[in-house]
Figure (tube, helix red, strand yellow):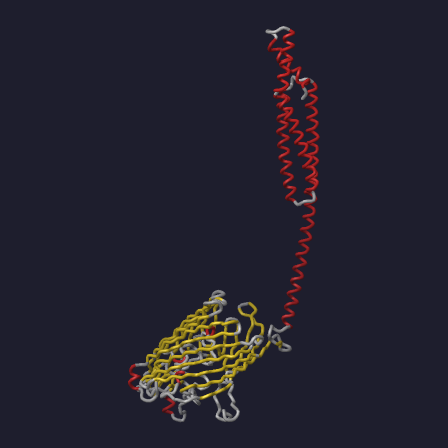
Length: 581
């Protein structure tokens, strides 16, 4: 606002206030002085200056927003949202200016027409600004509609693509199903004309054995060590033996079946080795022949296993890596015809139950083991009815329960129990006893890949359930009464990896049997075991590039302590070569 525009209003106001005191000339001079003062300090002038500055700033801001608005049409929705926010703030500032404008109009109602013209110009400027804002808003709405159209088209395209993906997935599943029906499982061969697969394998194992002292040549423990059969008194002689009886052959067949409404493999598993009963014809002096025997023969269908498999009491997941075929003293090595059911509580926890083939056993008054079958290892003369009457009679199957916890590559833990019924008769006298065996053990990683294996097994009527105590579950006295005997044992083993191709195992095992007091007083002939101990130390080497082959060297020390017949020990060195195919 110029000085000339403000002067008439200011002069008029001053004149009204000083007319009674001054003359017309003095009034003119006062008016001039008052005019100068108001020119410098008028509130309206300050408002006009502020308004001009505000409008100038507003124009610059609008121009900036227009340029940004043009650019924002090519940006994402987030930029458009920011523009809307700025436009909102711009509207607020315009509303504030309009309020100030109304206030200004009230203050300058008495101003001249040029002041009104200035206000009109301001209003025109505001009107044009509003028109620009309306144009921007219309452009914004158009952009939103355009984006909505693009979004709708995109959604339609996505829906079409999803339908195509579903179609392709169904076709892919059908192709995979067809391929699966026509292609064998990895590592198997498809049987022509069937949906079953088969695979076969073999493992050649050479054992070279040298007994430093107390050789058990041509007796139990010659090919496979039995500490329980060490000669008493001790024999001071050396002996060397080599054989391939541990060589194994196996075949496995799989076909698709269903269990509880879900598809699952039905697996047939057969495995044998050459530890069958040795025929005298073709012995070491000619062909070194060995006889096939069944190790495993079973069908696995979902949670069921039916056939011959590891006995439930045998924790095969915690076996010790020996060169010697036999496990450490105190361990369990038992295979049995059975029906087994596995219930998986979780990925890590399972509960297993079995009903297994029974095999009664006892020691007679001479300390000689007797078994159910007359044609077994300790044969009785079947032509003699009186002798045949002194037999164990198997009436009730063995029953076992096991709880197993597995955490992959970290630890394995198991708890197990077995119930067995022992029944025998001598002439017309019948006697029976109940055997209960319990055990626990596991494998635990300790340092890097190193492992510690441990087992504890024992109970009443243990017998064949623990290696080296077979035949000692009970004692049959002279009156035909059967009495169970107690045993407890176990082992501790440490497996250390020197590098990826070299590792060693050190194991220590023991078992203690509490023989019946009456039996210890009345037995007459054969030594009866009360303590057995073993120590195995070995080193294994697997050549680089030959993952299926290894060489092992092992030292074995064993000791046998008996009732009334003293003790005996053995030192054995072994070399083993194993090749899997």
